[in-house]
Amino acid sequence: MINKKNLLGKEPAELGDKDAIHVAIVAVRAATPINPGQKCSINEFGEAVSDNGRGVGVADPFLKQAIAKGQSFWLLLNGTEVPNVKHTWEHPKIAFGPPTREVKLNKTLLANAEDLGLTYQQLMDACQKCVDTNSPVEYEGTKTAEELSEDVFVDSYEIWSEWCEETGYDDFPDYGTDCCPEIEYPNALFTFES
Picture 1 (cartoon, rainbow, N blue to C red):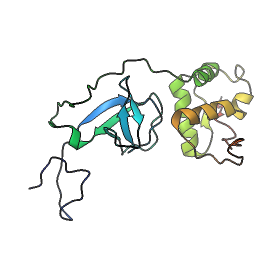
Picture 2: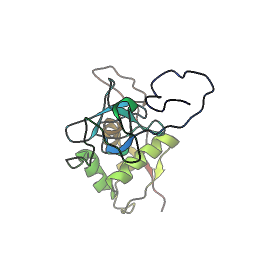
Picture 3: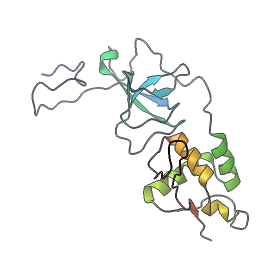
């Protein structure tokens, strides 16, 4: 029989052993962009922050994309720090609960979303889908083609630069230098089907 306490984070005693364990998890909100599986700490507001040091746990390693600032996710806690893992549990050093401050949405993205007749989340999701599919996404906002200027669908530099800052995405090609980046963002974010 395998000792269930402190099993993860150690080398298995014997190859091929199979078992199941309880892992304490808590729903938290990201105060910074966080990658799946990245170690995290909890800040003074009760939010998760990326922490490449020890941390209290790791961001859900099964997520398929980075966690944006303000997004909620499951934090898997280190087994060595939770003495009584049951379906209800306590942590001896941190009182987990809802964050103590309201989420601060990026003002530039919020204004752009409003100008586009979208919600903040619709704009964030559209950017992610555009990146995932490597092509513009269909516009799903409340405005008509006549109400939107043509440059909304062509020049979206401000949206992309702010979205990258919020999500931590940095895989767009950069042909500039450290002091003068020249990032190649997608040519168009939206298509408009009438």
